[in-house]
Image (cartoon, rainbow, N blue to C red):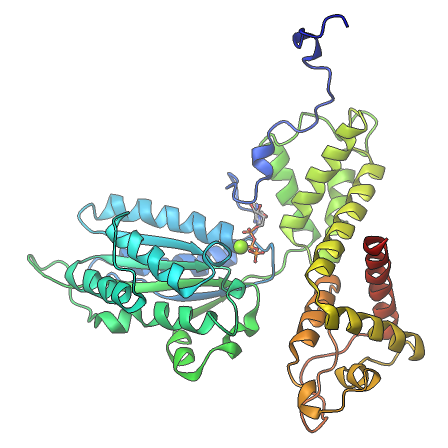
Length: 423
Ligand SMILES: Nc1ncnc2c1ncn2[C@@H]1O[C@H](COP(=O)(O)OP(=O)(O)OP(=O)(O)O)[C@@H](O)[C@H]1O
Ligand SMILES: [Mg+2]
């Protein structure tokens, strides 16, 4: 063997198209946030209540919008700006912002602990849930200033076990503290902390899962909806990331499709994923990785299309891995029914359970397996149309149906993916 100890000679040998992969990370904050001025203004107006001279008060907000519409990005960015503005305008006031992601904490116990730590710092505290809660209230009653609890991804909380409790606890903090607005400019004015919350969810139906007493406080929050992007927005988001230097210069040029052609293709492919900006960025990343792997010095149309197929298959795979037996059975049944129906007809949940010989009417209503399957389909349908749902009496519910043609296509993809997994 010769030269095995000489690594230097390999430097620069590998094709490198990605210049700075940090810019692809989900929590990277880009220098420019594209086309969110309506949402930014609405959020800004609410957040500005904290900067009120006499009566600073964190206005609570419930934010909704599909996946990848920039909710987490814009809210975290504006909270940073708010913190900065508050410090400059009122150096003596205390503004605390506690940021919690449901996917990281999952239980109400961990949520309450994070709030405790956010207030008291990393000190040893009580273990019992209600003692921790009492300590939080005590802190808020004996300090002045403002507190925002920012709960991102609340759709990730278990709807049956945790969601209602978490929202109840967080949305009631302000009432539990017994805050009443008093002017802050009076010297020696001992007021308690005023509390607001910000929740984000990609499912606007989540409120229907809350119990009535939780709903009544939660619904007082301002509602802000993030619109879906279109292909022009996605194009600009990708272009901005390129301008910031995520890829080596000119990787779309040379023998590639050209920058404009490449980004347009990615933007149009992201239509299948409801113009989810996260998906579009993943597609750009994956296309670059694939081209690197092939040793190409540019990204071409083929690589973008291959990357799209790869991402789609992986998505199918990860969803299928989460499915339980009954959900997989439903997929088979949907396929059977699709074949029998004419393309204009819709598939209903009643059809599905009839085919499975399940005849308890209450089974039709909100069956978790059906809900899960509906979610699977909704991820693959731009129009977000799912099955007709039936209520107990068998009348049509509110949700719309999908035509059989489309159903066959999606289910076929799932089944072939599942066969691959079983092989
Ligand atoms: N307007 C924008 N300008 C630049 N980048 C954006 C914009 N919107 C989204 N992105 C990028 O797209 C990705 C997804 O955005 P974000 O995480 O904010 O989505 P989200 O609405 O919170 O989605 P989810 O509901 O799945 O949590 C991030 O990498 C973010 O930086
Ligand atoms: Mg998010």
